[in-house]
Image 1: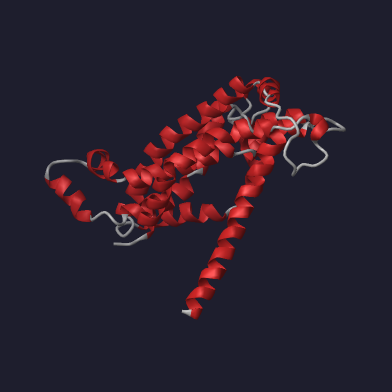
Image 2: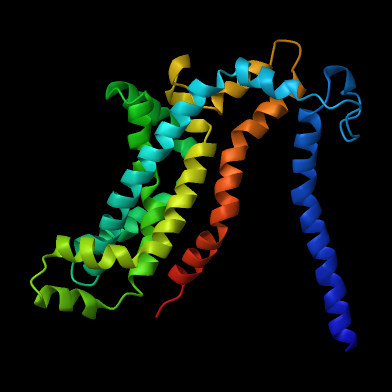
Length: 275
């Protein structure tokens, strides 16, 4: 009983510390976003006067509708093609993993790409993107699909392994070819993992800063993340407007995560268990 009490106390303390580390930055962001510029001496204290005008000014200064449209376009198109192509690639690789050295090599090739830091690829990526005219919202959408392939193959592969091969064989006996087997039989069974891949891809694409920074030079094609530079001047930074803009940017992703977090957890856990 004494040991259980000690464990409970330690768990409670760790939980409170973790909660504080999550809640405090969010509180600070909301607090600063509601402050008047003259009320920035004490960032932790509550605002003396709540100023919702910060959100209106941030909306106008960042040209929010245009930047939101660009970000939304890149994210949604990436999402659709990522789910279709990455799941198909994973299915082909895993079902032929033991039959072909080529597919076995492809699997390890995709997985090994997960360990390459993006900073190593930045310079060659800029040169190749310029050469093939990929430095626009259409090109960057294509690149998101490619760069998401290693992680998504890893996730999908773990889930597909848990689906018995006998299902494929039954579909083949019924006259289905591999494409029909995947589209009509296997893909509907991938819903939990597809939800996980979709949510993670959505969050990554929406929040990404580095790839748009190095590829999208035209202001009319830039995303919400790049628009945050507008609040930083040579000598001053408008922190209240900047934090109001941060909230406008993260609000959609927070809503998506809050309503879809159960699919993220269930999909990852299911794909990690070998049956």
